[in-house]
Length: 153
Image (tube, rainbow, N blue to C red; front, top):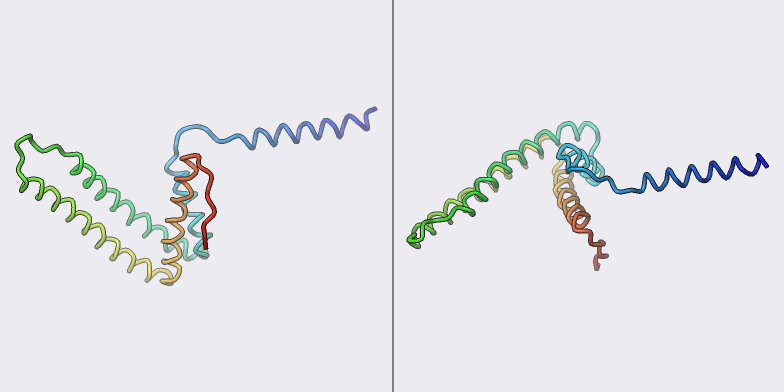
């Protein structure tokens, strides 16, 4: 009788552990955890060595931190409500200010991509940029709870 119950108990324990592990992790969003997942995904997809990873990610994060500030300013300008009697010139100036910040962001990107290309091969920088886009697409699909559609080739 004991010979039959031990494997049965082991099987039940394994199945219960499997269901606990399969539960989606709830809880609040963690920016640090997100950044770690992003880094590991990019490193894997772009085939970065540990040395390249150490050289690439500080520059990558610095660029994104600066762009986050610019994007915040752009969003503030987009939310700005002009007075009821505002002229077209006032709106035009607002649009010019937003556009100026977008150009600043693009110029910043150019400077940082050059830094990245000095740190690691340009091919890997390109692969890292593609990997970042892919990661964000996957995360959007995950958060929207829509299954990923196969791509046509």
